[in-house]
Length: 473
Image 1: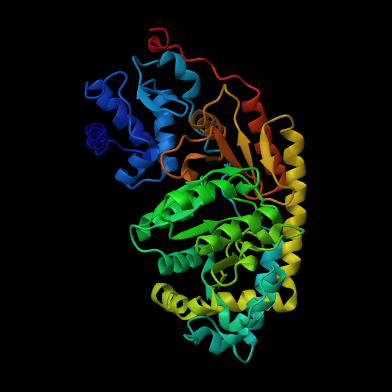
Image 2: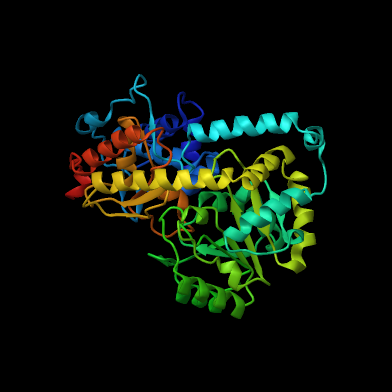
């Protein structure tokens, strides 16, 4: 496999154009030169991405483009292989490029819905800060590292509505949940250690594991997320240093744990003295939020939430609540990684909490998400989808006639961007033949309707069969 990878890298440097196209052309050049033979298995998307320092999605697009050119083919759950011959004529119908004149419909990013309400609130608050008596102080604040007392007091009120009631001295403000995860996990896990998480996890956590040098152990999931019995078996068989869980609107599957499931996970963590890092960035979107797992494990949990998914994507303010005994260590990590969260940004978030603006914008998000999920359910009726009425995304399992990379390529050809399952996969397990659709990232509900209609057209259309000699040998 190393030889094949090196051949691709060697030819890549001679290619021009977008990265995905360069990958496809590098593979085709290696095949034409006889350096890759029919039946050779190509590196996994993730291993090639790591070797080339490209994203996994770029590799997926590159392999899909190579398949369109007839040089490779994929087997679900097995991998990508060099074809026995180039099926150029049979794949011409796929060779049309994206129409640059048509705006891209982006349903690939899990984010808050953007709206004029956020802009108006932001403009008003910035004027208030600029004209206030303490405006100069906010611009020049450099301490305390955990955040100003007034900011942590506002955070305390917001956390209480999330089900976490702690004194402000226990709250550390960070630059969003991703920063909070870095702070928490770097304090808990040494390089070479192991963190248990869902078998499908946010690609930010996967990137973080590479940055900090720890391993991820994927735990089986079902419609409620992480399965307690699978977690317990893992704890019995392996040395686990920490547990990272997203219990509400899990990314990418949208699974939400029941209260009994949350209690079961907390009980296992307590039994094995396993520190819990709870990513609750989506939890606020639920009209009837459930108690966080951390509320059942207050002495060994690190609770995280933010505004980026529920209020405004650019409001990168996160609240991290560690156990009392770990506060000083967490504050030291905040200082080492960013000195302190940006006081100006946190000031906006704090004023929004105090003035009820954050609550109002949250209600607007819920209302718009319900509207969009109803539309998605109507258009995609009969399809194999998982979604939550107040969730920003849906998880679409594809019919057997479609492979995920080909489906994404076909969608891209129609100026529609969606996300593959591959970036969320932990370890070397088989990648689900599914895609994640963000109903929140469309610029308007009309654009969402257009994008969902394209999806429906693709789902109800059988891809043209690609005849290959290898299929009949």
